Every structure is written in structure tokens, then in C-alpha cells.
Amino acid sequence: MSFAEICNSTQIPKALLWDVNQVASWIEGIGYSQYKECFTENQIDGRSLINIHSSTLPHLGVTEFADIKVN
Image (cartoon, rainbow, N blue to C red):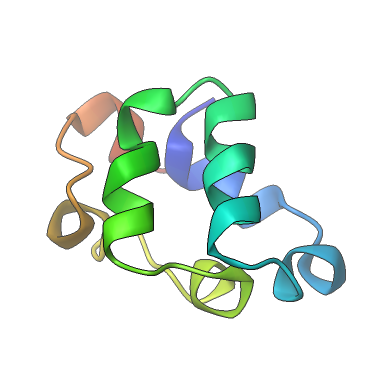
């Protein structure tokens, strides 16, 4: 499953309340630790996370096409 697909399938009510550190921990926990710093540096909290679109990911530092693509 791509990073974008995982973001889209996360439970919105729960994720909405996450702070930046919780988002970073979640990213690490789903196997995308290489992007943890990108999200932390961009201050992505739960509210921001649920509004991220796959076209936004490269601006945050997610650069691998396989991680961005949405099937």
C-alpha cells in the first residue's frame, strides 16, 4: 500500500486530534520512517494530515513515486 493510500484510509476522527509528534510516530509506525522528519519540519499535525493530497506530498519531501501513487 502506498503512503498516500495509508493516509487516506486512516480513521479521521482519531487522527484529527493528533499533534505533530503523534503524526511523526504514526508515520514511523506504518513503515515510512524516512519521511518522519519531513512531516515534523513542516509541522504536520492531525488536522493537516487529513487534508494532505497526494500532490502535496512532494512539497513536504515525499519524493519516491511508489510512495506517492494512489491506485
